[in-house]
Length: 434
Image (cartoon, rainbow, N blue to C red; front, side, top):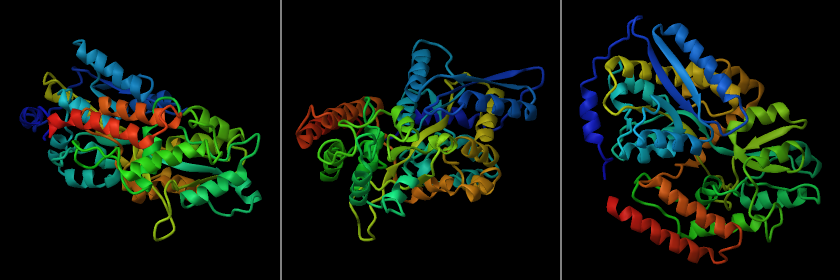
């Protein structure tokens, strides 16, 4: 099923193929909303980028607006738009927000802007396919541009592993448990996985993928939440805090996890690569980084798996913006997604620079030579799967999160039964899209 209003939007955009440029007298203000999910100084960074952009683009002013968490950002934008407000001109939102906003006609596809470029194919193909996957619809149209992208990765205290006789990180979940149990003490958890607090789906996906079946596909009408692999994955995550005893029952909280790691209260953690710079800067021990060893060993002995995550750049228009305004917005999107800014963003924060050429651009190119940890999340892309996204994403994600939470906390003892019930709800919602 094609996205609602896609045809209408594309017809409108065809009329914009000749893009105008704002005159110095007609100052254009681009309202840019952005979230933060880490302790990085996102506000300061985007103010710096806005200043750089304005020096190169006379007549365009960027107004960066910090809107809280990803969820806060989505809710703020929806509240403004549904209330008849203007909303942003561009925004960083979760990559999985695409279908929710496209269905309502709030965003327009980047594809038409790319098609109007002299080097559009070269521009688009420079992004890693794994990071582009959540920005493309089932027809292959690009709606959103990768920017603040991440994957969860394994952080480990290399000093503690060495003291326990381990000279390399775990490569599958059996090794993960072995090392975690060896490093667990009365004062220290062997492994923290942040699945507590109402949003376990992202970390859970790494286990589902590594167990052999992602919960989504390229078809936004299909969700696979009650497969044997999906059930085995959540049962394993639950066991980390129960039978295996390497972390707290129910998992750790998102914000507490890196704090505990830096304080020496956790030997290994799962967390976003977006925290890499902070952790490397603040740790008083050697920080190791590796692919997530979330699944059982395969033929090569490894059990890697992770979802992509983070935010994409979206363009908002209800059909009222002028060619000059749309040109200004697209210029800002191209600036943020350029190899130079992506290289700076990746080096400054630890998020994955989304384009291949950014990794050959300073300061990131030199940084990876000095600190190879920065290249791990990029290299892990060969093992990742698409982050959860479907039609009715917000509703279905809520069902999945609630179900996972009930299983992980022990409220629902029978994981299969709970996930069967959730799958029935999900299929009922998606039936109208099929």
